[in-house]
Image 1: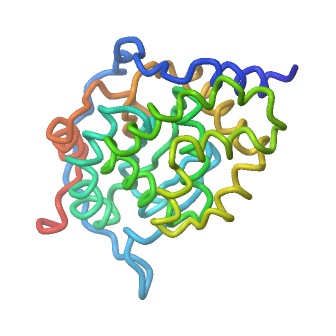
Image 2 (image 1 turned 45 degrees about the horizontal axis):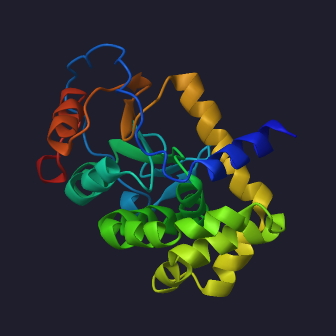
Length: 252
C-alpha cells in the first residue's frame, strides 16, 4: 500500500480525532518594524480578489509579493478555527490584506474523514472560491458539525465501497452536497470532484507531510514570514501583524 493510501485510510479510521496536542513553540518574538506603505493593486483589481495556489497547495489571498506573509494551518472541523474565522477573518482581509502589505494563505490540516471531504469540496470551484467556501463552513459550524454527527454511521461501510464512491458517500451522509450546492457548487460538480479519490487523498498526504515537517500539531496555527506563532486569537494576531509593520487600510 502506498504512503498516500495509508494516510487516507488512517484518516477514514479516525473520523473524530479532533483533539490535538498543545501548540507548537514559536521561533521567537517578531521584531518591531517600520510601517509599510500600502501597495497599489493591479489596475481594475483589488488585492482581496487575487488568489494564488502555492506550491504547498495553500490558497494565498492578496499580493503574492507582500512583505508580510501570513499562513494559517486550519481544520474545517476545528471549533477554534471556526471561532477565528468568525471573529478575525473579515478584519484581516478588509483591513490588512486589502493594503497589499499582508497576504493570507490558508492551508488545510486534516483531522478526520469529514475534514478531508470538506477540504476537497472547498477546492471544487475556482481558486477564488476557496476562502469564501471555507469561511462558509466555519461561519455555519454548528450546522456542519451536526451533519458530521449524523453521518458517522456512513463510515462503517465506506471502506467496502469502490474508491471513487467513498468520499461521495461521506459527503452525502453528512449533508455536505446540499450545503455546497446552496453555495454555488452543484451536486454533480461536487460528486465529480469527490470521485477523484487520488486528489482527495493527496490533500491528506500533504497535510501530514507539512505538519510533520513544520512541527504543527494544533489548529489554528499561524506562521508569519516563516516563524510559527503562539498567538491564536484575532486580537493577539493583529498586534503581531502591526509589530511586523502592517497597518489597517484606514491608516495606510
